[in-house]
Length: 134
Figure 1 (cartoon, rainbow, N blue to C red):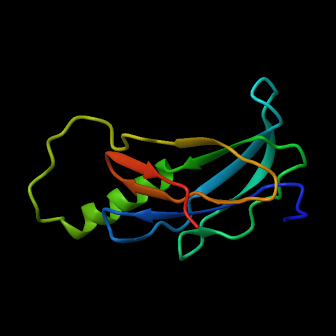
Figure 2: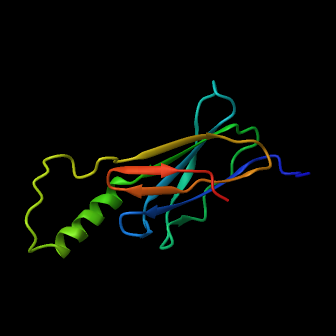
């Protein structure tokens, strides 16, 4: 039986289009105690070279819902610029759509005290996926 009275959260981001971790992505953590309660911003971090946030704030006692906000637009812009430089001599891409399809990703999930929740984000230019990891 666990004596922990709060849940804990960790995350990492993998850029599936590049096949490597997404470094430098800002991640913000919020929590609330009950579905009718107001969100409380707890702080944030940024992914390291391994795509991991190792210093997310602790959750307050009584947390039942958690929200992770991933600011992916600056990372995606940076990757697009790197790709453009690498393909200088390639024909121009004629898609007139936005450079970033998902500028941010918000993931909300329920938690119970004493459990750890590792919630990875798999990111690509036109899609993303999340799951409860271990």
